[in-house]
Length: 155
Image (cartoon, rainbow, N blue to C red; front, side, top):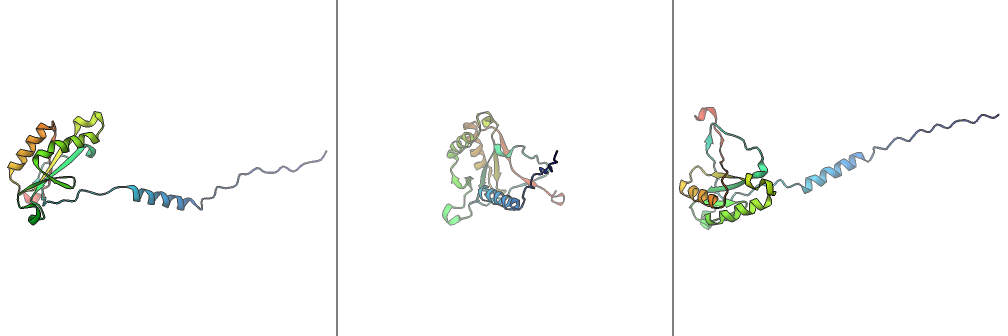
């Protein structure tokens, strides 16, 4: 009887030379497709300071309304204006804005929409009352007033 030599069946190692290329391609893909843009403010907006603040839980359910004096006073005047997203609107347009924001949400989350008012410190309460009245008509009853943390020496 003859003896046959057994060949070892080892699998070749997986080449990892292209792994960094794949990682960088994925990184560039997500960097290009991700939107990090915030709203461009057309108004002056210095929010008031507060000592007792509460952070909002789910930012995706928050829509912002900015109120303040326009930066371009020769174009928009000196009276406080309302800005939503990147447009200045009149108080009567707020219900339409609320309905558009609710349409972006799922059916179950529409009642959980919170409207956050970022009102300039120098703004009179008349325009804020008008905004609140329009929000009531649009059935947007969850309202938040934005503020920044006051420092200990500010008290």
